[in-house]
Length: 324
Ligand code: FES
Image (cartoon, rainbow, N blue to C red; front, side, top):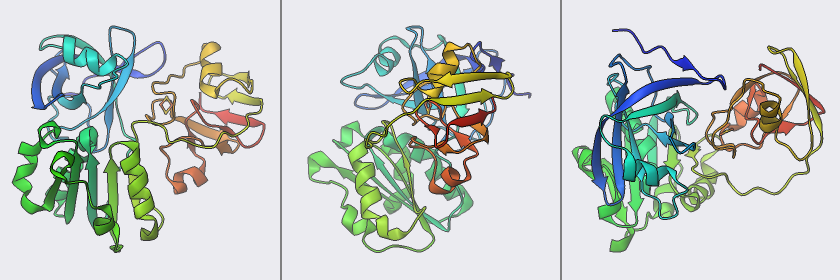
């Protein structure tokens, strides 16, 4: 079988015409959606931690982590929590998506960067289980030791418990309604050399893990955020951005992001979250030093300065040359 050829959209990002294959209730308020190529062909490969962007008919687009199996190239699976204060994405998925319906999809995009380690400690909170699930399977398949601690408001709202049951006591569940908040001090108290921590869930869990494992050393914690971390405001200055491929130079005023300034000039860039968390706007830096303000890049990637996320990041100097 051949892979589906991605269609280039006007914004320059690959888009796949897909169709809803199946919907399944996974827990209270959580539905999984399986999507297959509209023409039934094999889908592009992906790695644990990758996500898809759904472009909904309402005009909004939302990112969801892939939670199926990378070996299954016939469908992608995402898990969607119906948010109480939905801004339209999860509400649409729950209320209107039905089997057979066409869906526009971009991706898969991989910015969680699941890497090799001697062992893994996975920490999931609520719907944060979705990117962790394929990581668990991958670690298991490779024979790498792992443990998962998974917390939620109530057992009924914790998705994929049936699939996790097969792993026995390597999965520890902490439903809060039964007094079971994740005892992070216990799990993180003693650093385990060679073990890497992957965490996804609400910001307070991510912050608690990052703080609780600070003594594990640099690079030990990998966090996937749904929302940008609160950061102290930094003053913006006007910068000049040279778009090398397009042979254009754009002046980005202090009150505009690099992404929106390039979009306004009709340059081939695109964004989704616009908060520096999804990776959609990733752009290669050819010259200049980026002022990274995203929540994606690790310390090492930041220092290398090879890519940046222009929805939030700017320049440390006055000029950047980008591969746009
Ligand atoms: S648009 Fe999401 S990281 Fe830039």
